[in-house]
Length: 198
Figure 1 (cartoon, rainbow, N blue to C red):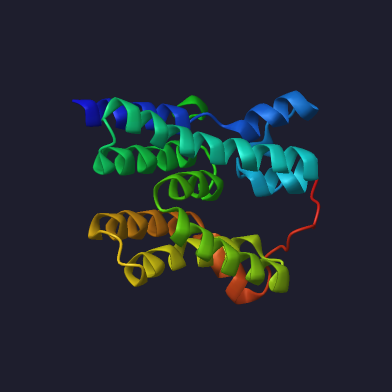
Figure 2: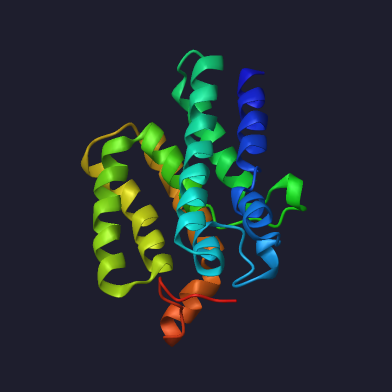
C-alpha cells in the first residue's frame, strides 16, 4: 500500500509542468504551441530565453528529487519504493495528467531522481555529458549520453542490481522520448543549444 501511495504521489508531483506554468507567467503562452512543442526546459530555453529555461530546469529537477524524498519518508527509507516513486515522477513529467498527457522528455526530472538515488554515477555521467554538450552543442545527444552512462557506472561501482535495473528503465524512457531527436541527429538536422525559435 505504501508503494502504491508513493507511486501516485510521484506521478502527481512529476505531472506538474513547470515549463507550461513559466510559459503562462512569463509570456502568457502555452509552451506546447511553440518551438518544438515539447513541455520541457530545452524548449523553454529556446522559446523564452536563458532565465526561464534555467528556472524550468531547476524546478523539474527539484520535483524528481522531491518524489524520491517523499517516498523515503513514507516508506522508512525503502530503496525499492524510492526507485518506483522516481520512475513515476519521470512518467508524470512525460505524460502529465494535468495537461492531457502532453509533457516533456523527462531529462531534468531524471537528473533530480538519479542525483537523489545514485549521486556518484549521476555526477560522473553528467560530467561526461557536459563535455559532449560543450563540444557538439546538442542537448539531446548529451541527454542520451547522460542516461545511458549511468547504468554502466552503476555496474562499475558495484551498486546493487536493483539500481542497475532502475537506471536501464530510466534510460529507455529517455531514449524513447528522444526518437525524433535521434533521427534528426543522424540526418544532421538537429537544432543546437543557443538557437532561438519563435
